[in-house]
Length: 169
Image 1 (cartoon, rainbow, N blue to C red):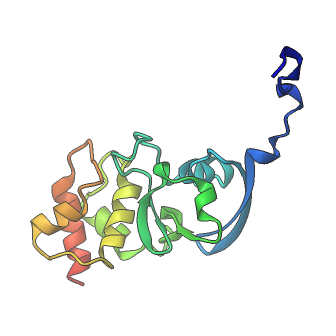
Image 2: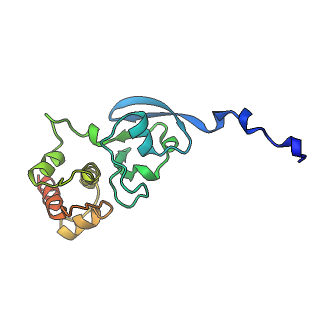
Image 3: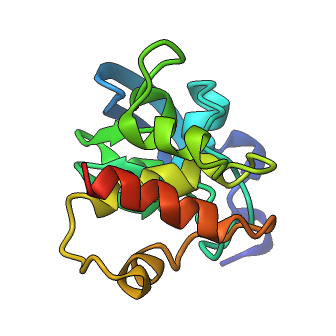
């Protein structure tokens, strides 16, 4: 390639770096144009302004960003938004409202399973997903199922009590 043949970066179109994504979020159809590198977490928070899902470590280690995609829990920080075209996404805002909380949300309040609150949305989303997964009923089973969610306040006993209450009906 001759020196004058290099592509001119100022003339490059962004068409190849952005993608239209159609997703259903909390039962509402959404159409977003996102940079191909945008995580699902950033799309939810920055594009749709659903800030209940938290950005904790941004490395998939803390679980604060847990959401449900097609009924399964995932760390939204580890998944690109473009991977979810056509998917159903549920965030903490989609579980319940202040006057009509999900049973897991009520149990977290009753058992003080929220402490500072930063990890709470991810904890609740994981706990709700766990209700539909195959886990034993022993405390150790619940702890293992929730091991991807970290609580820096140490409210693990309260979180365990909340989950057990909901699982027992």
